[in-house]
Image (cartoon, rainbow, N blue to C red; front, side, top):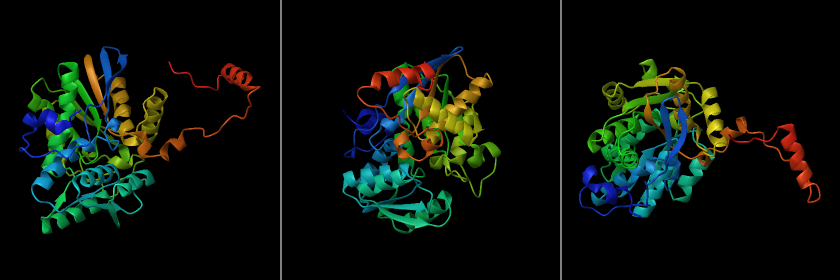
Length: 347
């Protein structure tokens, strides 16, 4: 199956260069529920090759970088960009350098980048400090390609999520809900819908309360949230995101960490395991429902990364225990548990 470059090259405006691909894209858009007059769909971006939406942009950024003679790639990351950059750089035969804020990346995400051969460097401070360092480094060294979302090719690749939604629904949804950290993805989806020409949804960007500069209207010096992928206080694509929301008559909303955890649990109990940043979108979707702001018709939420990216957070709400039994008593044990009502049954 072709990756997004070969599938959408005419829309992406990419030169006739070889695609560095891992077969990204083609992610499921599942029908989740009907809430009043709204048909809710979830776009499962965690099914991309490295487990997040970042692969859409990375295939384009690395393909272009290689064609332009790059000798290495570099990124600042709290995890997902690192994993994606390392994988696609490995596919291209390029070294990858990851600059991460010290102590601010999950072990799963760090390991994922390391197994692909990335070199990790840590700096004091948060993501914003790491991004400033890599931007300066790439500017001083043209042979090192910066592959964060400030790279316009990254955003062009991420537009393809919008194309796929339109291809599946036959039109743009009435509203699109997605988590916002560095604000590149909401900008990319907006441009994607506009470029594809089948309508533009109301764009709703959801942030964690402790890292919600676009909701508050000012940068956060010390952003804090359980959703590490969006723990960003100074979004690099802030102005593009504000334009997307304003022109689509959408809004930015903030949700609490408690609401994020509850959303993660609710999704998981329905069969969809996502990382906290992805659950932020679903938490925002629920707020919009409570506020009666969801339009009639199809509404899509972008679930940006798999829950396997962060193994620690679910321990906050999962009761990690086992029941002892044996072959002779298994049926009786199960009957007793069902009678007690202690076993979850999905509805």
